[in-house]
Length: 146
Figure 1 (tube, rainbow, N blue to C red):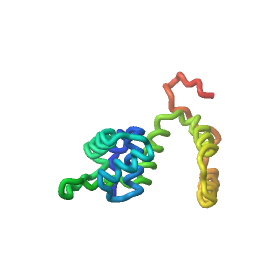
Figure 2 (figure 1 turned 135 degrees about the vertical axis):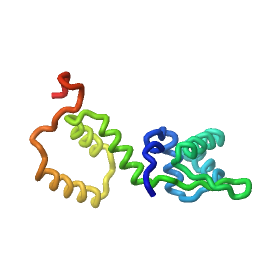
Figure 3 (figure 1 turned 60 degrees about the vertical axis):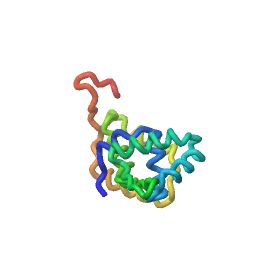
Figure 4 (figure 1 turned 90 degrees about the vertical axis):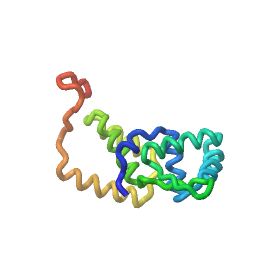
């Protein structure tokens, strides 16, 4: 499954909630999604149906008709969507402050022992070739990031 960059780039916060439910449940009916999101988010059926429709139009969900009902399946994989979203976010940030943003994220995210081990290995590997300073990518000649 290849990430539809357009679909992921345009997913709103509410649509991410729908996608998380679909990724968790797999092939899921609209009725089940409505029930799950009503319980989790307090949404009315119309809200969930609107969000599902948007995600189908954006190419993030596939809709298959089963009689009068529809079954929805993701057209983008969860990890690929998360990777794309975070990479895109960091592409918009000042390179000189990316380390601070990662540090803040690490302070606020729950990680498993395995996650921490992987990060330590990746940081040790990156440290071998890391520059002393990262160059700013803000407005040329107007950087005040120091």
